[in-house]
Image (tube, rainbow, N blue to C red):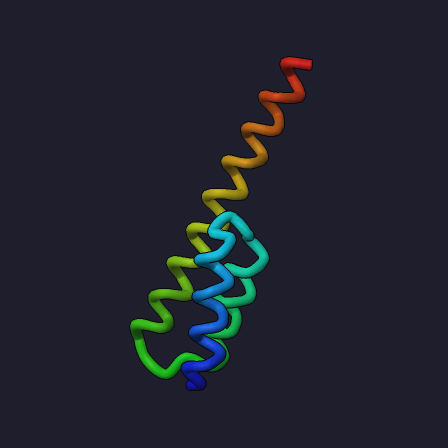
Length: 68
């Protein structure tokens, strides 16, 4: 696995932690290029985080729309 790519993904996520697309792409990349069980675990973690945050965004958006 290329540590340059991994570090690039981690820097992008750190720079914008709420960018769901970066996390999804990172999880895909880990599944394709990861070389250990910990990478597979990290991919699952990134996907779970993304789903959880997406649900929160949708919920908050619906609340905001109800207020209008």
